[in-house]
Image (cartoon, rainbow, N blue to C red; front, side, top):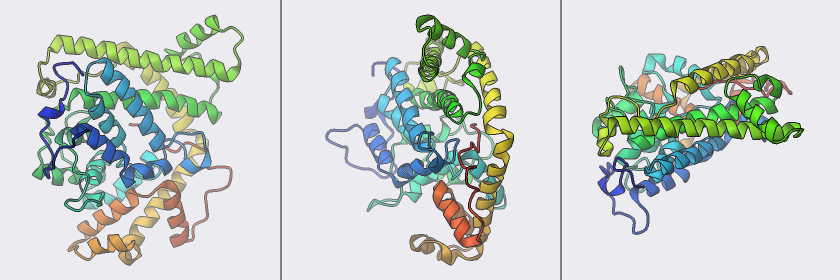
Length: 395
């Protein structure tokens, strides 16, 4: 870490609840470690990335995706002289608020929660790390530093318009300055997310045989990657050829972000981490040309993978599962686990009850949500042979 605009542990704005500093870990290292040990992080193992997680051992889950994002974030932040631990902490935590079944589950829960303030997975991640992780003796949540919380809340940019209730409550007592951009490290985490899923969705789509290697070899960026592999390794077998091409694609994205970000930082000339927040624009970006090419690839994936005709039935099934569970718990909160019923006993309105039910459903894994829906509603399991299909797209 040598960039003058890097986030430095000694300059941290601290934690909501003051703590003694560790003798051997920086404050951002402690944040990263607390996130890794959180129960919500472990549950990502059984949450959808694109494919329902327990129907294909090789497909990405939210957990493996988060690990890949963190790896990219460490690479980019290290190259740029930023704080790798902060970038890694934000990367590992960025998807903690996701529901079961990815964005399909989120869409269903957002519709159900519309009368009660709505649902937003980024805001839910803040709610998890500031409230719902209840393990410590002196506070609820993980008591993360201001910088890590800021990064989770606004790694995609300033929070404008109506602030989600799950974020608004915490922000009222620990101002995250939602109107500004986040640190460079948090911006790196956001672009690392894009790099990771653009790469691994191609891997998973090929493995699921939703499209062919030959089709990918005609796409922007990928055409050059396959061409380079074919020149260097003529006659390479099918699996090694596509792996070599996709690892080059991955490298192109990383190198582009590093080059563009360096140019943006040189143009703006920030002298402190706060200068980055106040710059009024994102520092960490793709080049316009590469971003245009990526949009073509995303459109291809949208039609061939996320919205393929054979996917519609599965999307509807998991949407119905979430929509079935919500009214059951609203009408019979005694069905909630014991530790959740303690919170229910203190509610004074349907809004408060709905938010508890939303927290509970959002925290479910794919398999647990399906099991609960089958148990409480008598619905039939997903038809055999139809589960290894993608059910959602990325933001």
